[in-house]
Image 1 (cartoon, rainbow, N blue to C red):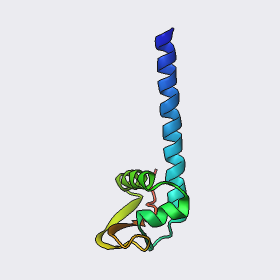
Image 2: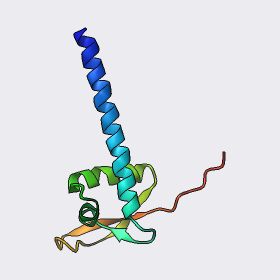
Image 3: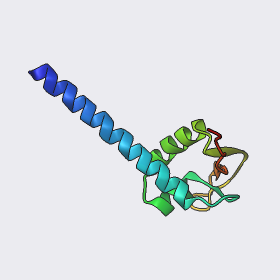
Image 4: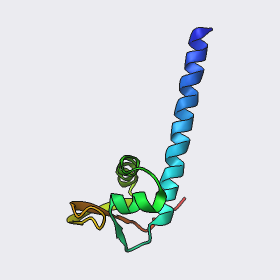
Length: 96
């Protein structure tokens, strides 16, 4: 019985985490405009998500080909540090 509870708790945790990630992906993408580049700090201020969460979600969104990291660094307007900016990619049409 204890093992069943542990498995159930683990499944619940992973379901919640995946749901939160999807919600955070949508939130970040909804704040980004096509053609505009954003630093992690800018996205953090726009979404009220922590910079660590923004960094993780941008990594995932790059893997999903939803955003791209620009090759050139630029100065972050909040900290002045040289950072990478990200840009939202246009959605590709999928033929079924």
